[in-house]
Structures are given as structure tokens and as C-alpha cells.
Length: 244
Ligand SMILES: NC(=O)c1ccc[n+]([C@@H]2O[C@H](COP(=O)([O-])OP(=O)(O)OC[C@H]3O[C@@H](n4cnc5c(N)ncnc54)[C@H](OP(=O)(O)O)[C@@H]3O)[C@@H](O)[C@H]2O)c1
Image (cartoon, rainbow, N blue to C red; front, side):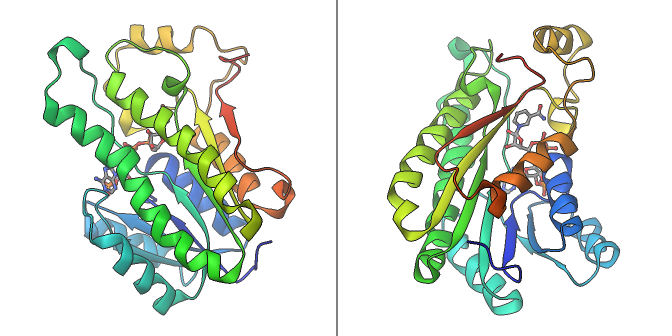
């Protein structure tokens, strides 16, 4: 299903879970196009550290025009895109009764609309080649209620629904679409949480050591690989057993 020379596109690949995904895919001997939104100078340094197998591309998920030119630039610079990881996202912690329309719209538009728009453009090139794989990074909030996260949870639940629909639309074209559902992972996104909040989120984990960005990255790499050739439309929790 995969061509080893195909490029894997990872959104938000310069830090957190996205960075661990990039490192894992490089370790597996594949080439990566990663997108960033902020801090171009330090991101460009990553190209120097990681070498020729990585290229970095600016991309803001809110930009509705950009997906088409992004896919074109990557394919022109690096060759065919065989895999897409919709990793980039934002989280806002706000009680629903106090949330503005703008805040709701932003979270839904970035996390769900952005993944939709980029997937649409990536699928247009994958369909012609009749090969490809997409992994969407959802969240346990899509499955379990978390106070203060209604917009975020709705965006991630939408991503799971989109994953299943795309799997049905694209299966006959030899394109697989799956999701990973991380539990709590220590990254910039969760760095503002109090210890109490972290303890609450982790209280139902079965495993003692929690979940690292690398744990998530290994599952993403598996779902993109031919080892997962029979899997599509699935959402795989990487949550230390919270959903057990
Ligand atoms: N950490 C967790 O506990 C956890 C749990 C479940 C799911 N997740 C999901 O995992 C994914 C990665 O999260 P993380 O924890 O690694 O978060 P993070 O450290 O905050 O990284 C977020 C990434 O998303 C990018 N990004 C944010 N807004 C963007 C925009 N408008 N356009 C383009 N890129 C944008 C950032 O790019 P720049 O750095 O260039 O701004 C950054 O690379 C997210 O989808 C998140 O919802 C995380």
C-alpha cells in the first residue's frame, strides 16, 4: 500500500506529539514534510538537525486557501505524499456557559475544519495514485466528558466521525483513514494544568507510567504502515488504559 519513497506530511511537527511523530517516521527511514505556524527560525534549525529527509512548510490551519498550495509545494519539492497525520490543534479550557461564539468557532474551525480542508487536498492527490494513509489525532475528550472542554471535545468527536466516513469513502481507492485517541500527555498543551487536574485526568490509568509523546508516535507509525494494512476507520486509544 505504501511506497517507501512517499512523503509523510505531519501538521504541527515541530513540538509536542507532532515532533515525536516526525522523529519516529524518520527513524523508520521515511521522508517527512512538517508544518509549523510559529517561530520559523527555530523550526528551520530542525531541518539542519534532521537533515535532508525533512522539509518544513509554513501552514496555519485557519487559512482556507493554503492547503492547496501546501500540497502542491510539498509534491513539487519532495515528491508524492503517501501519508498525512492531522496532528496540529488547539485547546481552550472554558465553561460552556461563559464561552463566546468566537471561541467555539475558532476551536471547531482549527481542529476540525483545518483537518477537513487539508485531508480534502491530500486525498485529491492520493486518489489518483490509489494509495495512501491518514491518521487523525483525536483525544479522549471525544469519548469522555471533561468539564471546560466542550468545544475541544466536539471538535475531536467530529474528527472521529470524519475518520469513519472517510474510511468508507476511500477504502476502495486503497486509502486507509484511522485515528489515534491519546489520553493525558505532558506537552505544551497540558503544561498549564494544575497537579490536581493532572491527577484527576490520570486517575483512571491502568498503567503506572502514563503516556509519552513517543508512545503516541509509535501507534501513529504503526497505523500508517503496511502492518496495519487491514485496519481502516478505527480509533485507537493510547491512554494508559483509561478507557479500559
Ligand atoms: N497533550 C495531550 O495531552 C493531548 C491529548 C489528546 C490529544 N492531543 C492532541 O494531540 C495533538 C498535538 O498536541 P500537543 O499536546 O503536541 O500540543 P502542542 O505541544 O500544544 O502542539 C500543538 C501543535 O499544533 C500546532 N498548531 C496550533 N495551532 C495551529 C494552527 N492554527 N495552524 C497550524 N498549526 C497549529 C502548533 O504549531 P506551532 O508550534 O507552529 O504554533 C504545534 O505544533 C493535538 O491535536 C492535541 O489536541 C493532545
